[in-house]
Length: 138
Image (tube, rainbow, N blue to C red; front, side, top):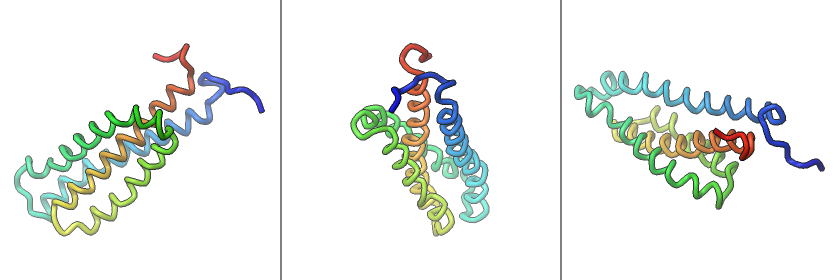
């Protein structure tokens, strides 16, 4: 076995994978922010823009608190475990949105998506920083 090599060149493949993961995680949120307001108006008859945007508030608060905990959890449980947990938390989101009988389930789905983002997005960013090593951060 060889020693661990730090730096972007030595870890270009892993770094590219993490960038791709960031893009996919971000695309899910972007798609949702485009589609859900239309669903709120057309399918659930919401007329208040404030009511429609409750899904963003649920997402944002959940992501903020998950981000807060992610750093400590990463050191205890490991980055890969949290990344996978983040992906698992995203699995029910499309199903919940697809079967939602009311807007409240859309909001619940965004609690899952916020936790997913707080773990998956954060862990990929931290893992990319880890790849370059302590001397090249920043």
